[in-house]
Image (cartoon, rainbow, N blue to C red):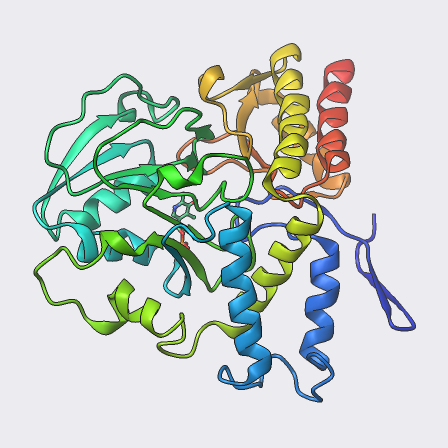
Length: 368
Ligand SMILES: *Cc1c(COP(=O)(O)O)cnc(C)c1O
């Protein structure tokens, strides 16, 4: 099978693979088209988006629209939250959260590799209490029913565990600030986002290309630590400068803005959640009904974004791998710490893509 692109006049027709990669992720075709036009001529300025000044009105408008769309799609406008597009990935947020907010002790729920990394960074700044962990079962479930110690500066959670394929469905009610790494399920479902005091997400999982990280933070939780904070790591500094303290990741913010526009036009998180639920039901029911496959994560904690599963019989691996590669599927191999397969079904993955995978799984059953 051939994949490539055809240019017909102005229109670029992409003949795409079904991209199940965990990140950088699939983005909507419309976004790729719009974003490639902007490389050649952005907003009819006669300049490429890659060369315009980040202080130009055209780009300041992009940054403002991206920040406003983020708050609007989360239902957080006018409630004391600020949206920022920072650099350094979600990994820099592991340390920035603690730098800005950890004075004495903070609680962390350890649900996987990413939480574990956040814990490691936070320990540089204060006492870290691992309130609950699912490390005992290679993170295949979400710990529940834990007791929170008193006097925490904040509680940190990871809403979706990209590697292990688990997702928090019910968030704890707490009396301290609640911080959540939503890198791999931001804008994928409807939640009461006002329960969180801070949300962060690397763009490249479900929101845009690599290079920028969304931070949504309630301003009133800042300014409580006594340590001095370097400007580039200080949320207040970035808020004061409208996310333009230094040169932002211009193109990454632009493509993220286009993706958020696309999501809004589709009906926002409520509409996309319905599609995401359908995709996840389609794949998980195949995993459960097809005797050749088994799921990794505990059923009640299964992620709607990243489905982890494996073949019950390893001898079929070569056959199955050849089948999905032939069908134009990309990025299905599991993370090395879980093995097997991982199908990432982010917002831009359509139900037909998931259908292609499910059809191959049942075809394998018929063949075997
Ligand atoms: C990928 C990922 C990260 C790390 O993101 P970077 O932008 O690469 O630093 C953190 N948290 C979660 C949940 C992730 O999936």
